[in-house]
Amino acid sequence: EVLLVESGGGSVQRGGSLRLSCAASGFTFTNYAMSWVRQAPGKGLEWVSSISVSGASTYYADSVKGRFILSRDNSKNTLNLQMDSLRAEDTAMYYCAAGTGARGYWGQGTLVSVSS
Amino acid sequence: EIVMTQSPATLSASPGERATLSCWASQSASRSLAWYQQKPGQAPRLLIYGASIRAAGIPARFSGSGSETEFTLTISSLQSEDFAVYYCQQYNNWPQTFGQGTKVEIK
Image 1 (cartoon, chains in turn green, red):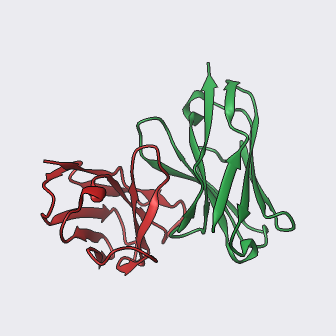
Image 2 (cartoon, rainbow over the protein chains, first blue to last red):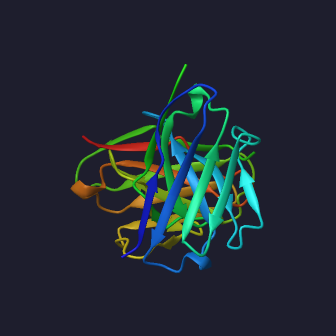
C-alpha cells in the first residue's frame, strides 16, 4: 500500500519557521520526483515546490521562492520542506505528492496556520 | 505563467446525467493536462493525465479530451460518489498551475 504521511504542521506566528516532513512507503521513492501542493481554507489547489529524483533540481512557486527550501533524503524515503519567514497567506493544508507532473499519490496533508 | 480557467464554477446535475467540465489554458499546455477529483476533507485524487489517459482504477465513465488550450472532462453518467470538486492542472510549463475548480453538486 502506498503511503505518504506528512508531519510538522502547526500554528506559528508571522515571521516564524516550520519544517514539514513527508514519509513515503509502499513504492520506490527513488523513482519519483516529489512535490508539495497546498490548499488555503476554502480555496483551490496551489503548487508550491517540486524536487527531482536525485534532489539536484528544485522548483518553487514565486510566492515561496527565497523563503522555502525543499530537500529529500533518499536513504530514508523522506521529503522535507523548510519554511521560513512565514506569512499569513501561507496558512493552508500542505499535501505531499509523488510526481512533478500528474500526481497519482497524495498524502492526507498537514495543516499550517500562521497568525499575525 | 499559464493561467487555467475552469467553467462552470458550479454544475448542478442529477444522478445518471452526463456532466461536461471545461478547462482553458491561457497559452498552450500541449497535452500536459491532468484532472483531479477532491471530496471534502480528502486529498485530491488523480483521474486523468496526458489530457485523456485514465489513471489506474478510474472508472470508464470518466473521460478527458482536448489539447493545447482547450480541455474537457466528461462524466458519462453521474454516480452519487462523483459529486465533488474537480480541478484541472497543467504541467507543461513551470510554474505548474491549477484551475480554480468546478463543483459538481446534486440537483
